[in-house]
Amino acid sequence: MGKLEKCQAGDLVRFRLANPDDFNQIAELRWGLKTGDMADFDQEERGRFVAFFADWLLRSENRSIHFHWVAEHGGRLIAVMSVRKIQMLLSPRKWKGCWAYLANVYTCPDFRGYGVDADLLFEVTRWAKHENIAGMIVWPRPNKAQFYESAGFEKQGSRLVLRLSDNC
View 1: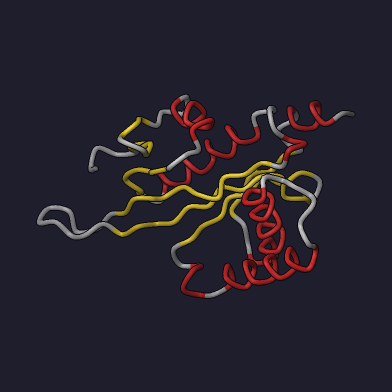
View 2: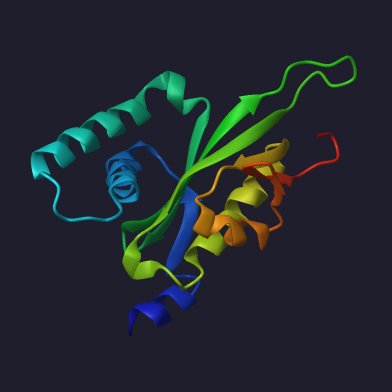
């Protein structure tokens, strides 16, 4: 079975919140995102970055505000979307609430174009609604704006916003 058939079979690509066992793979995905998937980087530099980033993800202060959603295929993480919760300041009639900043959005090159990113964004959005997040904000690369707009995000200056509740 080819890559396309595997990606189209929903039970073979699993979408879930990451756990600490995933942090090294998330760091590898981050490396791919920030280097444009170029293979000509120093492997020692890559190893140092991956180790440092995975350790950064493990720190308790980061784990309470950062949530990493992943797409898993065959035991390998093939996509990631990171969400940072941002607590809203209190208002007289609104004593709690938060927004979310969407970042670190990346899909492995071999799995692009099969809807993995759209399915992962759907899962992140569903989770955000369950978490009572008022809305999500993303500052996409210019070539990715249409992806978010097709998912309901609206342009506001240089950012895109998806309102999840009327309490925004």
